[in-house]
Image 1 (cartoon, rainbow, N blue to C red):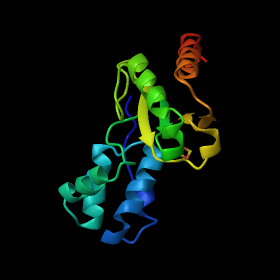
Image 2 (cartoon, rainbow, N blue to C red):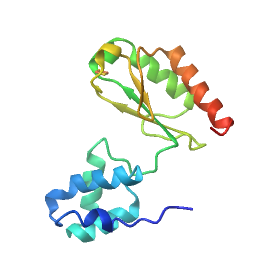
Image 3 (tube, helix red, strand yellow):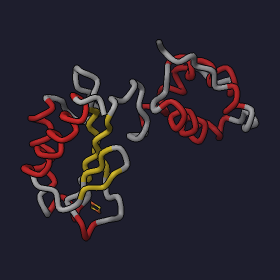
Image 4 (spheres, protein in one colour):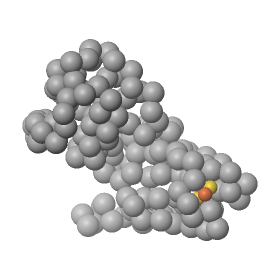
Length: 158
Ligand code: FES
């Protein structure tokens, strides 16, 4: 069942000023993992700005998500250091294996793929992050094996 969206608790911590919009969006995404449609409606009323304006800001920033993420979030670092060490090949492999592109979720709802620029661990690049767990010195083969591991865990209901 879909979680009921009520951002009152979050709104209570804010004054209702337009300049708070970005940090409110961040707080909502932290809570739900994305920005549910209903939260945008409540936010627009609270700040007295149009829903269009809220959507405009939410879509302008790469980090905001308007659809629920998959069960596992895979983030590929495409910052310069990771890039020169082969991140594009890792990304290609993940896209091929998962049959999705950046910001998309697999049909089974298991994986979402995202790209970021530098996560501050350049010496270990290429880096991918799966559910907050960092994996360094990534290669396409290692990425394939990792996916296999996660898929197997899912099959066994872990
Ligand atoms: S460029 Fe990937 S961690 Fe810095």
